[in-house]
Length: 172
Image (cartoon, rainbow, N blue to C red; front, side, top):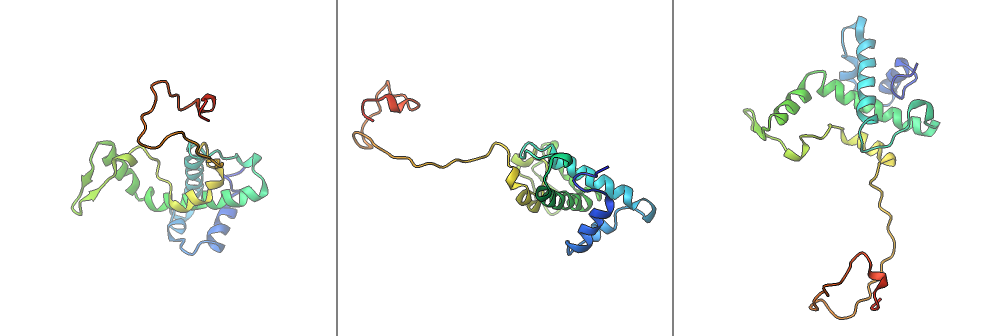
């Protein structure tokens, strides 16, 4: 049975051992007897957070190609590490709770929260970068535009002008 996009916990441990410089938060997940349980929970929480985020259209484990799995496993591990640092300690939950109450400035150090971020699910920048290829609904398709206008910028726009139907105009 897969754990997120990983085959098993040993594969995730290999990622942290061989590919990540800082691993303290991963290594410290729970007491020794239950470390695997907490690592599995972190990987599944990470998987769910990024898989169900509407910003991406991601394949499930069974449908991902080998090349996609390489990237998805890195994203899964990096999201799990973020969760181990910020959720395991309750840090993210406290801040999101304050934001949910409508607080925009709090604490002795006067932390300021962006209201626009209140409903955003926190995803760290490295994970966003890894998942960019699966960006959902944000595609931009550039094409050459040519501007042909009769008159200049000081001319008034006719009342019957339809900006969505400019190609039926006699002027174009």
